[in-house]
Image 1: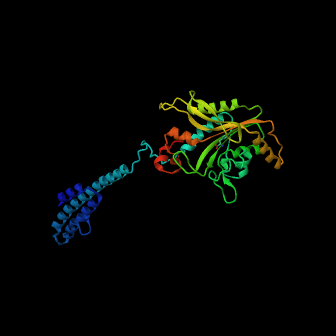
Image 2: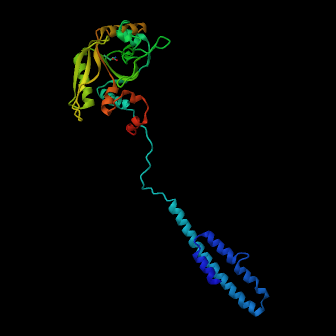
Image 3: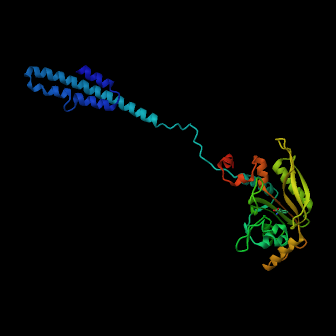
Length: 338
Ligand code: PHE
């Protein structure tokens, strides 16, 4: 029985099995315990000998149980430690992160360029009144831009701004020259959408007013922007154009050595020298507010451009509607890019 018990103890694979072996041999009704119970029936001489014999077996079993229990406990602890070990040298799990929308990335580029040239960056209301959006910008009531087709009108007679130019008026009414400002923000046009037209898009408007500001300053500024965007090889082209709030007015395009070899003129926006009627409208508004008329005799230029066109080319996005469809397959490509 001794050998059999010791064998069972040594081969018990875990603490549970060991406990069962313990119960089987030295538990209340275990085999060794039962043997001890038989001692009473033996003659005294025999009882003494047999008692010592059984006690020796019991001691051997107890010792073996203790030894095996220590080994199994240790093994269980080691296994637990190993399974719960943390390898602090492993790289961390990447956290899901968002990213700047491609339009905002282009804005960041543009605004960085203008901030380096000393411009102030402002925003303005998207809900405008007719006076700021059209009238004060020398857009007469009969101008085609006033056509219901182009403008989202609100029930209260106000409208969603069709360009960022009304901020020229607001900024000049609130500030005295000299000034260098860029305006960023959304604009709205009531038109059918297609690959290059959206009902909502963005503009960056520039406004510079001072003494003796000239067309040459305007051209230099646009050229500086082009080089900032596309490097030192960038060239700009100006073509006469008509916007009621500038005279002369021009459209500008940019050319640069495109590494993909598909260089062509990129029509970016409109610009021109501020029309005297705009300065007059600003001074009229200032006068109503009790502010001095300060724009007579001043000169300035303005320009407006669309970051969508730059972003479509820069990121190879073929349809302007992709920017605002919230399709993760499109926007997910810009994740983590800040
Ligand atoms: N506001 C004009 C547009 O939306 C762009 C422009 C701005 C033209 C400033 C000239 C000067 O088309």
